[in-house]
Image (cartoon, rainbow, N blue to C red; front, side, top):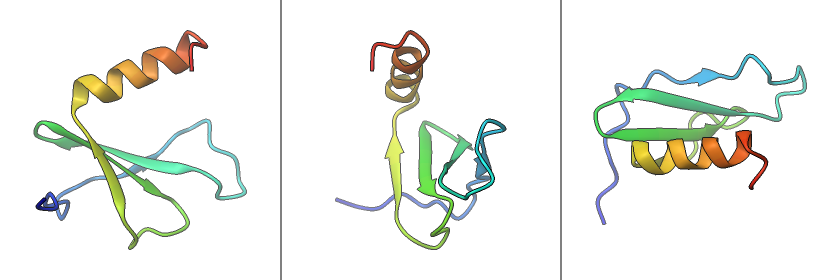
Length: 66
């Protein structure tokens, strides 16, 4: 499986993240892809999701289903 090109990803950290750097960063500016990475390892691997799957995950979190 090929790794997607994340060179243009604009990662951001949630405004709800704490000051202890235990958070993730998300990039939603890539066409057809959402990328997630560990804020403590910005050069490390990133997980990628289709936007619909990411939105379903966020909806589950907001509804306390996950």
